[in-house]
Length: 290
Ligand SMILES: [Mn+2]
Image (cartoon, rainbow, N blue to C red; front, side, top):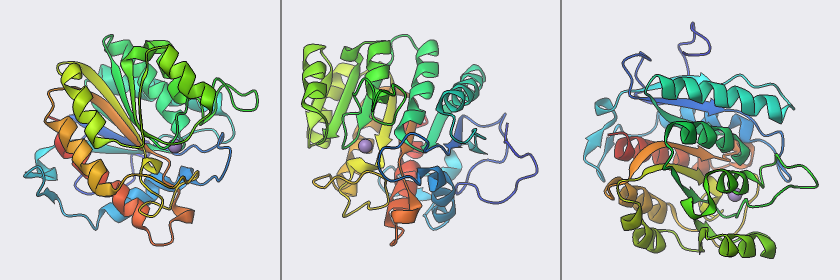
């Protein structure tokens, strides 16, 4: 299931060498064809893997080692440049296979539109699915300049697909007035500006549910994570994001898949964004893959 079977180089730290034996599968979705502002997130997965080597394998937060969780790094899904429709089909086919094999999908973007086919595939398997979404942006547009498949639309599309009342967004501080109105009128949960406290209020209602979690790195303040396409000041700290991941880990929700998207290394001069992303992924793996 690795895309290049001869590949032996850049993989996430402590990933397991064998697909069959692994409980979860990490994969990159190197697509940034629909971004409205700064491109570059197609290079995110590669850079996150490279810097992951600097991480400790042990989490003092969770008292757990990466050694204890078998996850396979499948590499990046080969995607046709400039063709979002075909790219989304390729991603969905890949994730369907993972789910059929009983694996937990762990995605790295790429622009946020890559999460849409993943969530659709996960919903095919888990009909009671809820989505937890951390982001600076609503991503609730119906289209962007007439284009329905855009990095500004994935949450709208999944909300229409699984029911808006099953989607919970946190940390939102940017979007059109109409998007906020649509969410409110359709029973979708949006917490503006904050993540941890409103999340703690919602989690008890999701206990026992199958949940997909999608994190746009720009939920963090650009002071902490400048390496992303559409920066928006006023975000949360990595400390709050880590605490939110740990809150989900101990909440009784069943995380059936997750992703982290929109890391764009070319704007990441300090490499702080990629390093932060790698640690966040480590904590999600250790906290959510049971
Ligand atoms: Mn965003």
